[in-house]
Image (cartoon, rainbow, N blue to C red; front, side, top):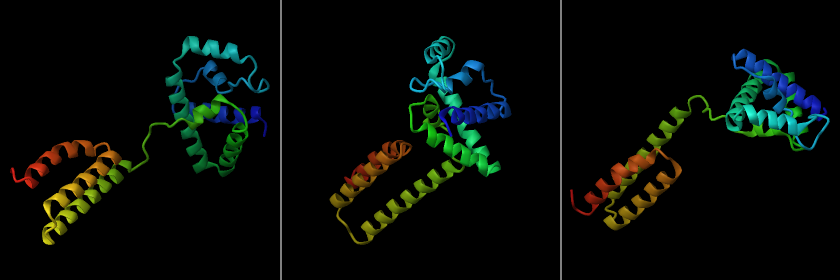
Length: 186
């Protein structure tokens, strides 16, 4: 597969996905998928295309739009057409050998979360809370001194805060109360 064939295939799939999703896709947006400065066979006049594009479009919005279309098209191909999926993978491998703007569009995250991702996060939060409660139960049962408990609590809370952004709010609410309790100031 040549660079031109790879880009033709990927651009066609993106255009088909745009039509399925009723997303407008202009001619210059299609041409930008072919953009590269290193392969004149797949992108004649790259500077003209780039100048025309920059005069009319915002790059970040375009990249986000095209990334979503490409990822949706890939998902569709994966479900509907295994041969098309193999062609997609081959096209990406072919383009990875050079410097092509289409790879920037493909490699950009879509910002969409996988299904049930929020449920997984909630489950993880419940698991962390259960572990912390078990720790405090063990500490009370075996009379682990307050200094050790406070140190361990601080380490666990810091790990939680660093690893999970919503936990920062919970940490802010609970840490002061816990420190007051462990220091005898209910």
